[in-house]
Structure formats: structure tokens, C-alpha cells
Length: 318
Image (cartoon, rainbow, N blue to C red):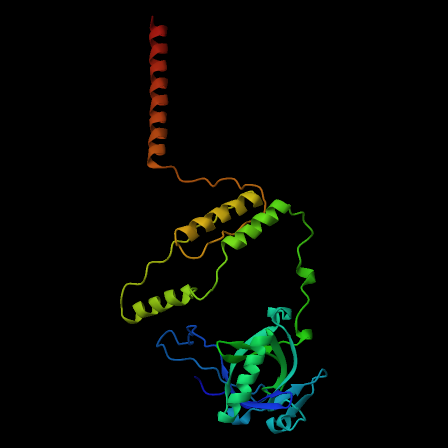
């Protein structure tokens, strides 16, 4: 496991559970550096004071809060640490709620809580079993990086997980983004539900980051001087189709069933485009056959014209 990010205790009524916080996730994304194209030297970002133009080291940089009028108020880490915050070194459980009542949009980063010493083993196990038996999650307050946060505690494979949560006033209201009112047939709803049932999975553990796999293959080929992988065929989406929602749903259900029965992995639902008039087809370059036909047509017309002239001359001569 990685090194602890924070140490403190879970406050559970009069029970105290010493814990260490470690990250529950790890970033497998491939990160790039900015380099000078001529010699591949690394390009670094310097921290420069905008008043005197000097580059600063980290020990010369502090915190400051800019007030609405433009005045900057300096603040030190010591002053922040001395603030009277009861949750400074504690994850204080304040309530237990049903897991279904938590909107996933409020959940942010995730961390595992590990016991800090043998004395924490029994109360840790007690809280874990209480959460499992009650089918509830715990809502807690804790302070981290000089601010108080809201958290959610739940059990995952025998370990207690801490999810950092956003405060209610940090979630934007999406009502203005809702589409205008439209009529949806009951048959369409039933068919859509059938599609969700057909595409249902017990687990999503089989999904992989295909982009990262392809990027690793590309970087390996370049570093070893091998031929680069062939680019994937980019199928052009059909434009200008009039959308038949029920037909699209029926086709999606059929495709999902076929994929599931053939063991082809997860089903794919194609994007359904808005209704619009069909665009006129683009003119394409004539094929060789077409050009030959046109040339032959021109020759035939010229021959007929020549024959007509000869006939006219013979008549006038006679």
C-alpha cells in the first residue's frame, strides 16, 4: 500500500479508532512532458513574480487571499493550523443514512482507512460490522488541506472506505439544462427498459482503457524503432438520416441479444442523431467505366453526325 496521506482517528460516539488514510485509486494515465523539438530537452515552468520578474524557489512562495477590492492578505500555514477546528485530526461521524439517498454527483475522491496500531483493530471491526448489518453509510466531517470537508464511510471488501463529498451548495442546479417537454410513447419506454435489461451486467470489472493500451503500443513501437501500428478505420457516421426512435430501439435490443448470445462481450448502442432532412448526395468522380461509356457515347454521336452529312451531300449531287 502507498504511504499514508493523513493520520488521525474516527470518532464514533464515544469510540475512537486510530486510522491512517491511504489513496484508494491510482492513476494509470500516460503523462507527457513538454520538450524542445530540436533536441528533446525538457521545458520546465518557472514561477515568476509578476512585480519584479524574478524566478522564485518554493521556500520563497507563500499563500495570500485577494479581497474583492484587490488587496492581498497574506496567510501562513501555522495560522491555518491554529484555527479552532474540531475535526482537525478526527473523522467525526455525524449521521447514518441509506446508501441510496446519496447522489453520486456529490462523491469526489476515495480513500481507504487502515488501522493505526493493534489498539484500533477491535473498534474498527465493530464499526465495519455495524455498517454491514445496518445496510447504511456513515456521514462524517473531517479537515484536510486546511478546509473542513464532508465525507461518506462505507465498507468495501472488509475495509472501510472514506469518500470525500461536495457540500450541497457546491452542486449546480441542472434544471436549465433539461430538454423541452416532448411526448414519449409507453411502447418506447417499455422498449428502452427492455434494452437496459438486455445490456445489464453483474460487474464492470472487464472494461479496460483501450486508448491507454493503444498509446502504450504506439510508444513501445517508436522507442524500439518498429513499424507503427495501423490506424483504426474511422467509420464515417451516416448523416441526414431521419430518426425512427422505435426502430432504433428495436435494432439496439436485437444487437444486444445477438452480442450476448454469441459471447461477444458488452453490447454496443449506436448514437441516435436528431431528426433532419436528408442532405443531397455528394458528386463523386466518374469511374473509368463511366468515363469510357461517356467517350463511347461521344464517338457514336460524332459518327452519326458524319453519316448524316454524307447522306445530305449525295442527295444534293443527285
